[in-house]
Image (cartoon, rainbow, N blue to C red; front, side):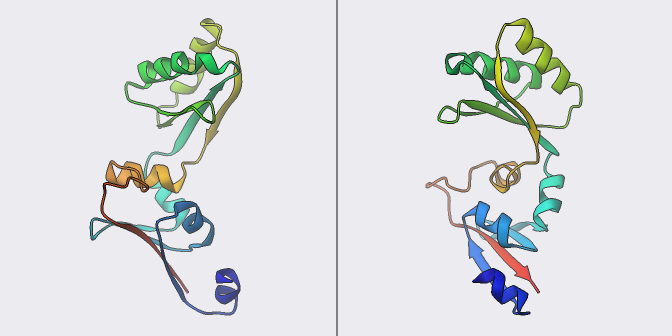
Length: 150
């Protein structure tokens, strides 16, 4: 319905904390955290501004997930996000040398991979990079993304 309204030339102001929804529907986004505007731009502009790309590593053997996470933390010098349900670890990265080093180290340690992907960050990852907390954290005040398209 929102897409139809926009296609008909209607300006839609969408307030949501569902960042996947905002990513799909918004032309322009205003990120508000604790009542303050902290960033504005298109979804792609916000993603580019907050760290470039995300390296996602999923070991073929889920039991090796903690080992893969520790290795990426060691290489990146920072904490990684671990999704045990998906069996993957991810880390935003800008260091171009990290990708081949991670592949070599994983191979040297005999960690067979189901997935080794470089992708754009999600708006959830953008929100975390901007605020230091997840959008779905219950103990944080309401967060909003507004679509200010046409």
